[in-house]
Length: 267
View 1 (cartoon, rainbow, N blue to C red):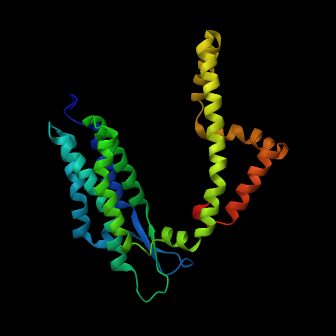
View 2 (view 1 turned 45 degrees about the horizontal axis):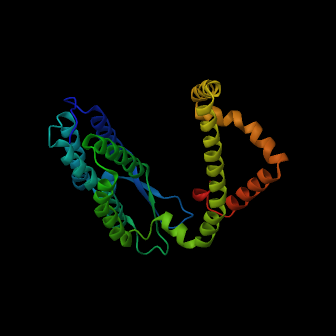
View 3 (view 1 turned 180 degrees about the vertical axis):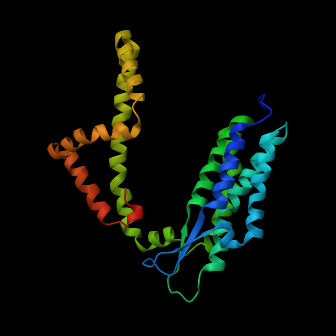
């Protein structure tokens, strides 16, 4: 059942507008003859030509019109247009590769540009907004995403020159080793956080004084920006890495793994 909405959906309007601007103005991808030579960046218009670039913008223009006056059937149509845009994302990269990759180069590489990543981000936010407006259950949205994932899988055959894919294939052993080594580190950190959070929550539930103190501390911490909090923790974390055996081992493992991976894959 649809919820009652204002005449203009400002969230959908803003997301569609910023997606249109970034899609047309920022580089969609880059082409390089190998991994050493810097690639040449292409916007969507220079990659596939203005006629097809305008065709790629038609669903975004439809979203802008629907956001201005959604109506009763506007949100289902907007969801369909958003899924269509997601489905077409790999196709534009494949078309750019077909037009600009020189087959005479032994190892040509196709890079993904800012416009492509930002479009994926804006469309994901649009999906969240439309799911809220349509009150869709999570499993229904997952079913709607199946054709999109199937289309991406079918397009994978035309995207073998992707730099990300070539790095994964060429350094598969290093990537798998990094994943195996990082899983216990991440699991330990998340597990300790969950355990500590559960203990603090139980203590706050049992003792009103602890509850007041806990909420006061949390409210204070929420006022500190994440970047500033990271800066404040640098000194105590450095001390732990220098004096605590487990922390020293974690730091050593991280440096070892980072040295064995390409720059784009380092954490």
